[in-house]
Length: 63
Picture 1 (spheres, helix red, strand yellow):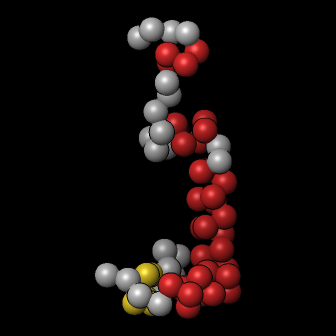
Picture 2 (cartoon, one colour):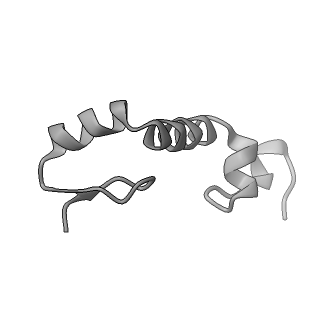
């Protein structure tokens, strides 16, 4: 399976360090990773994307 740049589809096999270096140099890869990291810290965005569910019991709602 291995690592593949999600932006430009470059393949790296199991060379994780090479893949990480590529993401630093690949402008499209950096933009994509940055967007993913921003979403991972934004609860509302995660809920909107369906990555996380909203816990109504946390706000005192039972339902």
